[in-house]
Each structure stands twice: as C-alpha cells, then as structure tokens.
Image 1 (cartoon, one colour):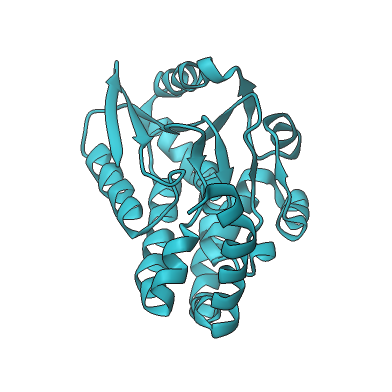
Image 2: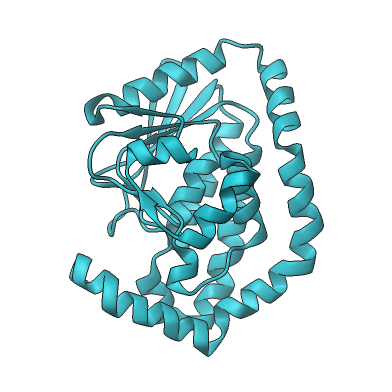
Length: 254
C-alpha cells in the first residue's frame, strides 16, 4: 500500500494502492503511519509519489457510495488528520507528481513544500464542487496557502483539472519535468532543502504556514461539523453516486 525506499538520507514514500491510489480509510491510515514512522526516523527529507498513471485520484468515491454516512464518519476525520500531519511535518517534503492528482490527491500535493509534476497527459485540480461535495476547512486553507489567495476562488469554483504546464501557470505545481525524471528531480530538490539547518528550515516552514494553520484553528470548530453533516446528507450521497455512475464507471470500468 505504501512502499518505503531510502535514497541517501531522503525517504521516498510511494503510494501503491489499487484504483489509482484513491484515498480510502486504509490508505489514509497507512500514510499517517508512514509519516509517524518518518518523524522518528533519521530521514532528512521526504519525497512522496505514486505508482502507475496516478499520484492519487482523490477520495475513493466507490467506497463512499458503498459505505454511505457510516463510512464517512471514519473517512473524513482521517482525511483531515492526514492533511494536517503532512502540512505540519517539520522536515522538507517534496511531491513527485507522477500522474493524475485530483481533488484530495491535489490537496495532498499542496501539503508539500515543493511540487514537481510529470509532463504528459496527467491532470491536477480540485473539482469537488462539481462532484457535489464541500471542502473541509483544512483542505481549503492548505490549497489557499499553496496557490495564493488571489487564485484559490477561481480554482475551487471553476473546478477544472489542468495539465502539468497549466498547473504550473496557476500555481498548483512548482516545476514540470519529463516523466522519467520526476522522482529524480524531486530528490534533488529534497536534498537541497535538507542541506539547510534543520532547525532553521523547520522554523521558516512553521512561520510560512502559520497564517493557514491559524485560519484552520479558528474556522474548523465553526464549520467542520456542518461540513461533515453536509457530506452525509442523502442529497450529497446521491450527487456522489450520480458522479460515480455517469463519470467514473465510464473511465474505470469498476
């Protein structure tokens, strides 16, 4: 589910989950466990990537349709916990975006300090509103931090998915590399960050992310209970099921 490879002092975490590395309860927990292990390891930096044609296709909507509101009770807190754990991780984290990074997969990318995406046909973006689901506070603020406040509204409300080149222009990724070099380029960037004083890097990272974390701390208690309830309504679950039937089944054959 998560493979681990040490390249020098940089730990590569690779998502290897059936179904385009879609985020289900098991994968979220595996990623959290991997981050906790990394935090007490001697790894100086992390590179996160995927296997196959996807970095992560976002939440596993098939599982949500099957499990309904009870499954969401388990899924959404884990999703929020993972985003915050990765966003707060004090050491350098670089995303090697090997393929599609959609919705929650895009937010996972945006948690990282630097984002390298492979050239080609892969797409990145946040179409949540067009699936029919709201953004949890942490996901929205992490996206705002990554792309800037002047861009976030158009990305969220527009709902488009972008090629790597367009993702670079709109701020979702920091650089584009040939597909066969994307991990190597991410490793180079991770090593460069790791060459800095760990304490100095961690302090700068905390300072840069503090405004987003402060907004999360302030708004999440006010908004997230209602957002979770909104995910669980019959109307939202019906919208997810329509999206699965009309869009995803045609693409995946599941």
